[in-house]
Image 1 (cartoon, rainbow, N blue to C red):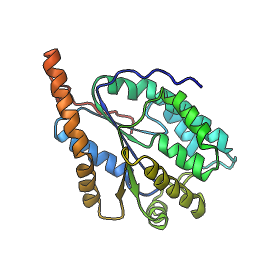
Image 2: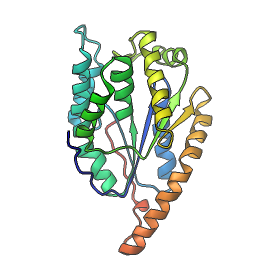
Image 3: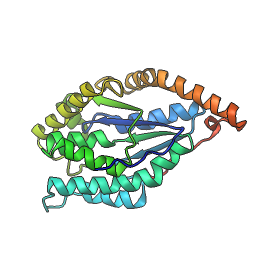
Image 4: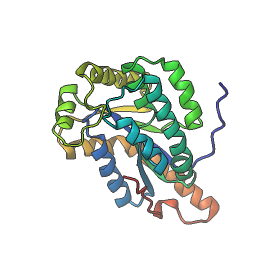
Length: 242
């Protein structure tokens, strides 16, 4: 399959991953607040979802209906939503120079549909390249907790979805998938221990992203000097579909 050509981009793409109940959604929100407080233009979004159409696909995927969902059907729906999301939200934001924070992205597909559902990783990667136009995160934060801890957090809440009700063995495979992917991509994927208190996890996040933010800030300053335009760091953007 021919890989689509990637567009030039000035922004920064950070994804947040992990098993159910790992706290990544909360950390996405906290990181967005931190970045905006330091003057960065940010777009917060999520998968599946991020656009009106993709959010409808999300509702179908997470619905607790009695009809079984084939693993291939699940994967195709995710890729369809991702293509729309990348086209409508992620690519435009990166082109404008924003920092995009995405609650789940391609690594979740490999962990859930690949490692846990048993679909071929090479096939999933090929389909993902088509869905993303080969866009990859600059940094992926993997929030790791024991499965029992994550499930206890999730199952204490009222809004359980179809994935929350999967077996413990399924979630163990998902966690193992994330950890294996992190070993394969140590430069991009950083594991954050998420069993600690929320504020301690947030501090670990800001420490982890600091070197990349420094490079991004220098690049933004250089772009501003060349174009003699205000730095894009002065913008404030937040994707509202939450």
